[in-house]
Amino acid sequence: MATPRSLRGDAEALTIEWDDGVTHRLTWRQLREACPCATCKVKREEPPPLFQVLKPEETQPLRCSKMQALGNYAYHIDFSDGHNTGIYSLEFLRRLGEASVA
Image 1 (cartoon, rainbow, N blue to C red):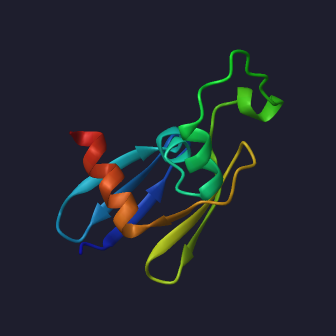
Image 2: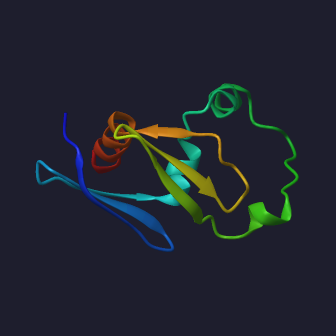
Image 3: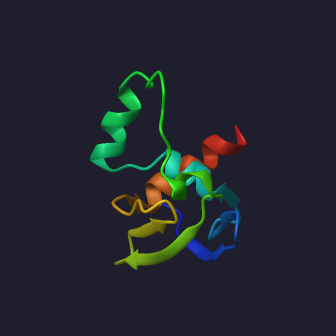
């Protein structure tokens, strides 16, 4: 399996350079909407609400407020909307990156 050679985050996205030469740019919105935590997985399966009331932080551009490595297999991302329970494995990030270029 490929491993990241470098990770760079800016205001809009995370750029991952993999050791096999592939580079992916994933926006924070893409990462947040694909969050692999159990709560988000269940929410994605529910029908969308007829009226959605947004919290003030949800009306702002989504950003990463903190990103931390978990061993050598995953990353934990804190988002500006307050969400912070997803664990993004390297395999998951690679699949997201591949899907975003397809």
